[in-house]
Length: 469
Image (cartoon, rainbow, N blue to C red; front, side):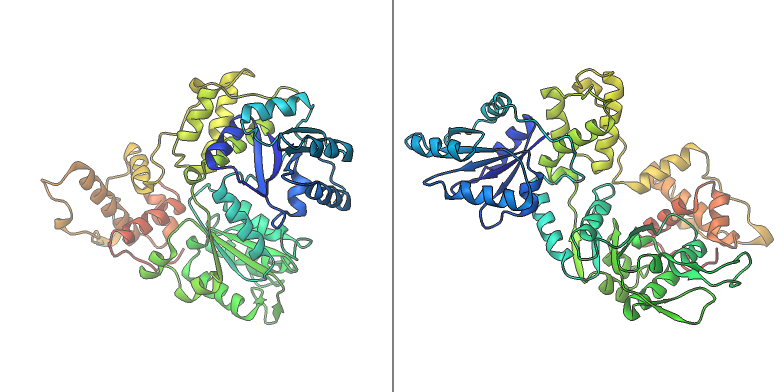
């Protein structure tokens, strides 16, 4: 994918034109004299500038390139009736001159090929080709300059960690560490130790002082992913850290001052979680000093083909880049992508394997047909397939947590299955001393059980909140 910086003070390309350019392997970045940044110039493989009346814009662009050591060639667009302006541009160092009424993406691809313009060997770390994405990127870069806590929201796989990394890299803290941590990845007691650290002798096996991730992020940024999965107990401790900007290690007494930026991310609706009393309202307002929402991939379709190009270049063997047919490109752009960027990457990797170094066509694209949005139904199907719907035995004469009215003989089968699963979960919780033990009884992971409990709360079913691990 060739990065083209498009400077036109008179007219902007619309979404249809941008899509046509993308189909030709040209990623257009539009800017004006007022909005043009040094980063735009540095990242461009070629610059196209419309010289409507005089050579001034060309000279200004050349001066900025010289100041930042950018070497992208410049293609000048001039009106047909002002041939002398084109001659002057060539004399100033323009690569070539074309008519300003040339707008066809195919013609531009041919122009670049004839002028021997090639894309840079380096691949951009991030893709922001769609206008929706570009607006989000511009806002992110502005927020990065202000040292505030940021909450990133958006669906799973949409790129929240990518945005967190940009917030760090574009901030004054860019030389400091960037520490990423998934709040749902491990048991609560381990999370507490990793985040806060511990003093020597604070518990069995604590043979030395261990700084936590908050301390390790000093001078930089800590990114807390899946913050909605954090336990209520840890939420209270996190709130105190955000309020006091200090942390106390486990087993310690001394508060350690922190100079860090906190970025949190979630794919959950935290306002609903607040209403269900599974997330602290005061913590929500501390985290969301500024809130950025990443739209799903289907709402930024012009990002799809540049992302595909990036994934192909990452996976292709040296000197053997794959290409997509027009039918494959159309199929990729029109698919709804319930799994977002993560699903797109999986589809492209599978397609490259099936294409066997040949062109990727529509028959090579195998989509994940699983209804990802309906997580509860997805997990229910897994549990049903493994036969986990029978109620586990209850010790000491304990009574199961359900009433006879929960299952009715004339209710639909899918509802009956849901009720049966609910009964099994409640019975396992009542019969177990901890959530981990209940998950083991049910034959599922603790994380899956946590998700199931959250789904039950969203349906208005009262479930146990506080139980030991």
